[in-house]
Image (cartoon, rainbow, N blue to C red; front, side, top):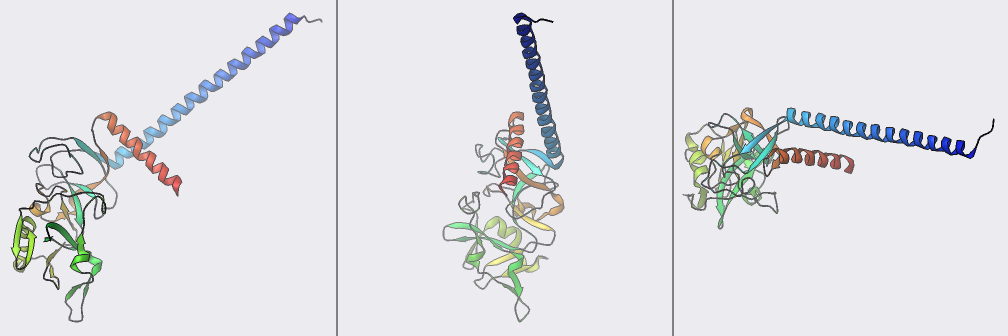
Length: 277
């Protein structure tokens, strides 16, 4: 059988079309499978995130400037920011937490001391400071009396962006004189005023600074904007049982798009941390 040039041209054209068709088929299906896989993985991640986290809109100025930095100190009902709370992680000092069963609604504060810590709030120079003696830094001397293994100056917690990642705002007019010490009035009234008649454990340092011990199963929680915050200085120590969880990420504009974006950014950072190991 004889073949003309036209037959070869027709055959080659047909083979090219078949090759293009197969390539288009494979490219389309592979692309669709990749997109499907991406959405399945994202859906699994997002579902897991929703199960292990809870979303809260933050109202009021008590956590300024960390949260709701734009609103007025007198505006309790406005909200600019929101948070995702990890429901299962371990609560540590420095964490921002959501607490239930304290007031008519949930409140959001920062854990500044945990069970067994000795704490006080006093002035040094022109500024207020939180003083914290960790439980591991307390011991008994030869006479069986409590003794701090660190000095008051070492117990002083410097809360600012350079050292701990957040700023606090104190009410500079809220003071209580006690001997040669000046305490923050609301803390003094709640914890130190009746210390001789209280069931709490106390410690007085060699320099005369008075501390109260955080009871077992409780934390001391304060708002970053302490000038206006209703926190442990009003409600007392916060039980771990009432803590919903700790804040794992912020949403500085709580629209749905930003919520999803923050979740994606969170998992992207988790993947980066994993491969960085």
